[in-house]
Amino acid sequence: MLLAFLASFIMMTQAPPLDAALTATEAPRTLRAAFTVELQSQHASRVYSYDPRNEKGARWQVVSWQGEDDELEEVAANWANEAAPDGRLFPDDLRASMGREVRVEDMGHAWRVAFRHQPSTNDGEFDVWAAERLQATAWLDPVGERFLRIDYRLPKPVAGPEGGKLTRYEQSYFIRTEPRWGMSYVSSFSIDLEARAAFRTISRRYSANIIQTEFFFASAEAETDFEIRRKGPQLMSGLPR
Image (cartoon, rainbow, N blue to C red; front, top):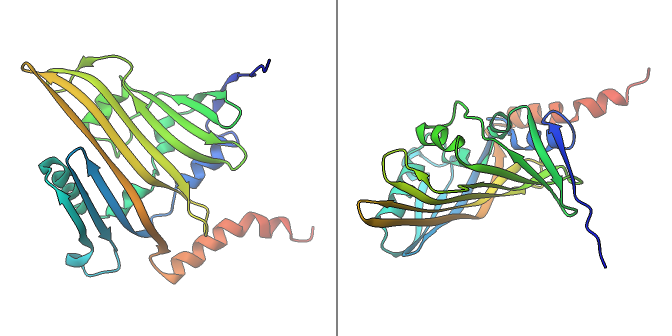
């Protein structure tokens, strides 16, 4: 008979390995990304490419178009119209969202980190409303000191922010580590919701999968500055005393 040992404890977000994992999500603003993303819904699929190095009108391009879904096109249009669409790949407000302390469960292969989402300056009205109602969970590799996944889930049906009832809401972000600089980025995310209003049920389900990425700094000077800051403590530790 195998017995699983489950340890549960409270941890401050400044403590290792949680602090290192959070630091890896805080990419400098000078780090940019060119990427190709596949957006999928129940009825359609779209593939887009984005490269901030291109001229403004040519940065967001359609690669593939299948099916019809007006809402999926609206999702893509909103993303394309952002000042820096590649900013969605960097979960840089996760530290602020977690607050000062979290509850950790050691699941053996990973840590399950439960926290109450704290609204940040990047959050909109829905994010603030959702923060009071959704359960937030992060999965952490304690050895590699990197996040693997972030989940938000509605534990029970609630009245929606604009009327009706939200009966299901699940949102997940999958995290990878880019190999050159060791920063964490969102490799895919999905949203699945169901709401009831005016005698009808509304279901929305779509996902975004980053199928190709290229990370680079805005300038050679920015890259050099990052490398110096990253290696600074190691260089200092090797100086003669």
